[in-house]
Amino acid sequence: MDFAAARASLAAQVGQRIEDERVTKAISRVPRECFVPIEKHHLAYEDTALTIGFGQTISQPYIVH
Image 1 (cartoon, rainbow, N blue to C red):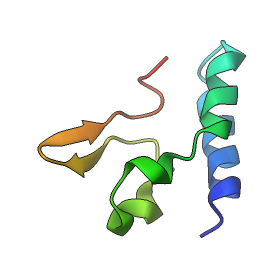
Image 2: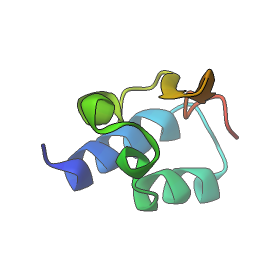
Image 3: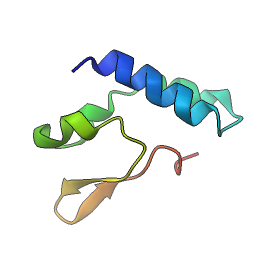
Image 4: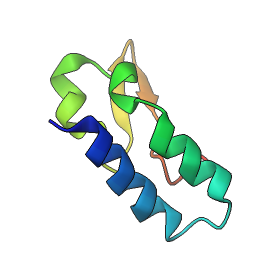
């Protein structure tokens, strides 16, 4: 999977709904796949919350702004 392209795509998608470009820049730089289990790497750049184990989740990117 091309994580850089996926990050850019998610940043563009979220950027259409968020006016603060600092948030869009952060999304385009932070490797979200590093924060989810390897079996969920293919979902890392979906605009959705993901389980990360131990009953915890990583929030949907659009929500964190």
